[in-house]
Image (cartoon, rainbow, N blue to C red):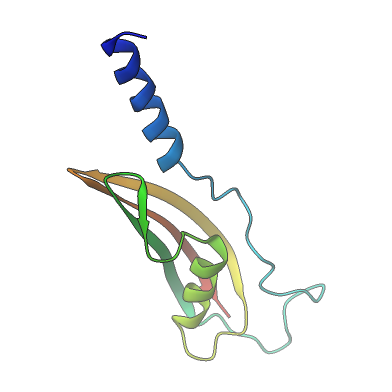
Amino acid sequence: MGKSGVALFMVFALTACSSSFHGSYAPISYVGGGAIEGSEPLGKVEGSSCQTKFLYVLPMGDGVSTSEAVRAAKNAREGARYLADIAIDDRTNWQFGYLEQCITVEAIAY
């Protein structure tokens, strides 16, 4: 394998190691067959779960987690019992020497 082959392999290896799939998993925030009687919308909430990877592959801190982002969104509003209209987004911010990967959840708290 020549120098260009090694370089190409390294690019694919770094990409594979720094890619993570949050999936479309979101834990159920409320199960009960309908709205809770007397519940009122408390407003829009947002929560995130992020991780930095030094040199694009060395994780620092806890891994990104959809469950943690949902929990953070629910805890963003005092008195929130459940979430509705949940939207989940993930992004990777590439910087020189590191990247930050985040999962963000937006929802309406009840």
